[in-house]
Length: 414
Image (cartoon, rainbow, N blue to C red):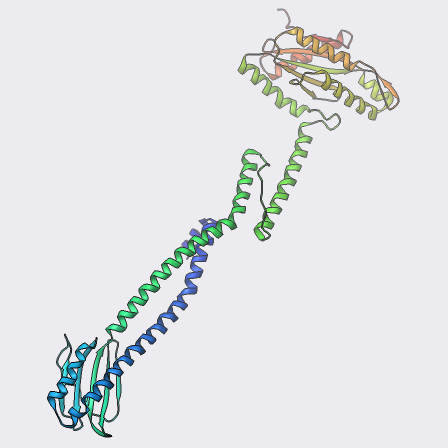
């Protein structure tokens, strides 16, 4: 039982539904088939017994005169007529005084004298065994008892008909089970199809982080309710993931990518440059005099200024360049797909021009500058840390040279 339960737990829901339906039908049909077979057995047996009784009546009427006159030859002729009766084993005519007048033995039967219990009697008797039926019929001529007829018949025809009946029942049951399995498979597929869709959608989310798999929920049953609830849950999880991604990778004040995103993106950019044999430039930007703005007009205006600077940088940069806010008033730009300092210098100058333009925020005219340090991979650095430190050094060099300018890192001459 434990092994069966363990095996059952390993089955799919579709397989469980199919076999539960088949077993349910089987258990429902067992009593029905038992009742049908039992009823048919007694019905056929009744017909067989009735046919034997009819033969006994015919033989009894035909042999009455022969028994009254003790005519052995006429009695023999009467009993020979039983040759055409199927399953007839033997027949005996016993006179009223107990004398055996004549006997008939069917083909293959043993010649035996009737037992004493079958001696002449005015009362009719019937004896039934598993294989034979014996009928003792009293015979009267003009109301005078002249003797008894004893017929012994085989029940072979009964069991033959029952055998054919059982064969038909078995064939019908097999066909019924095959049809039940086919119908059960179709129904179970209809029931489990939404569950398979849920499994596929779950795997897409867990393996590919793809929430686009459609979840159909046309039915109004429990599975349909589960599908709709699961779809709603997936939508909420997707929204939550997007929110978490926004919080994890994007700056809350400016809306542009943050330092966490920058650290992943710079590794990817250097990998691309190394793979394709190109250069990657990193521009580290520090806003000049931003602290003065914060201290004079407040942090709220300072946040508006940071947002304005982010928008200016986004409009200035090329589409394939990446912009990040990596600190309070520090920004970073990753420039790929360029191989000369002049192009990067032009980008840096555009940034300075865009950032240093005065702007009015909530009635306050504010102005900041931008000190930019530029470094190149793989020319001046071999990894992320070196690229960042060299661009930082160039940025502080720009600040030392009066702010609001850019400096390209040059390694010290040894």
